[in-house]
Amino acid sequence: MARRTKIHVGLEIGSSKTCMVVGEVKADSAVKILGIGVTKTAGVRKGEIYDFSQARACLKDALAKAEDASDVEIGSVYLAVTGAHIQGINHRGTYRLPDGEPTVTPEHVEEARSIAREVHIPQDHVYLHPIIRNYWLDGLEHSMSPVGLFGKTVEADFHVVHGIGTRIQNSIKLVREMPLEVDDIVFSPIATAQMALDREQRERGALVIDIGGGTTDYALYLNGAIAASGCIPVGGDHITNDIHLVTGLPFSSADRLKITEGDASADPVRSVGIAKLTDDRGFAEVEVSRSILNEVIRQRLEETLKLVRQRLPVGSVGEIGAGVFLTGGTSLMRGFSELAFDVFGRDIYRPELPELSGTQASFRDPHYATAIGLIRYAQILDAERAKPPGIFGKIGRMFWSSGQ
Image (cartoon, rainbow, N blue to C red; front, side):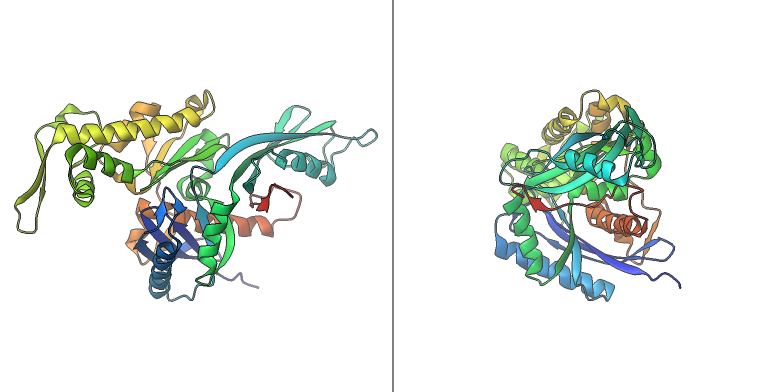
């Protein structure tokens, strides 16, 4: 019987935009983007909902646009969540085989996995993802489960993501009031990485930085496995606010000036003269020293990138062989790649999406990287579920209270 195509929907409720992407996974595993619904977000700050009614109205608008663009009646979504309260940590579980049982069984591996997942977290937190990194058998690393091999000690190494339960539940409640079902909850940088990186890049070592309006999310992969993930509550809106405070310009004018005239590099040639905004008649509406404008932009972005670097495991930047991959709307800032190179000293890239197709050219815009990454995440989950059990560790998430 021929495999059927399957439709998945990715939803990102960000600080600056609410984005819903409808994707069709074909029988040959190719992904076609059927439609995108985007609206400006209200009621969300630093990736977290603070005005439920405003956020609900934005989501309703994005849903209507996505259904209209894709000609699909949407019933469920993969939901991206972010916020500074979400943390990713690595934890290893060790299980010693009982005497008289020299061969590793699925039960032995599951014992090690269970121990690895039992990470102490704050009382108000819940688990989002336990992602298997690798296994160890008697001190030797294995990328696959060591079931069937001889050994004495099995270890499972996990990357565990957790966050405040009530804040995550608020996002779920928002979706269900559409009404839509939530297929899965995914930490935003993990979703983005599904779009940004291929297998070879993960093996060589790669860092994904997704900088949006209110947050900067990151995910680091070393030797094919996730090594770190997190969220810093700083994004493009903070740059706009800095320009507003320094120049006295209205927020909207400061934002336009940032986008049309700003440059984040330290190149002095790009900071000569006056930056101008013109009105509809072509007259100068705003004039600001270009050196001041660029310095404000560079300082905020440099601080943000250095915060990301500080949160990475010691010495890990030197293991990034494939480079640093920048995405998110703020990554489009002129000179940002040069600044990122100055901070990390690694090759800087913008993710490419050659495996996607669709009638909308906008799907290649980095603004939509997380929502499109959710489609890829769903596709990977489908592939994992189709494999025989006990061969690979599942990438799926777990969502339960810390009290259980």
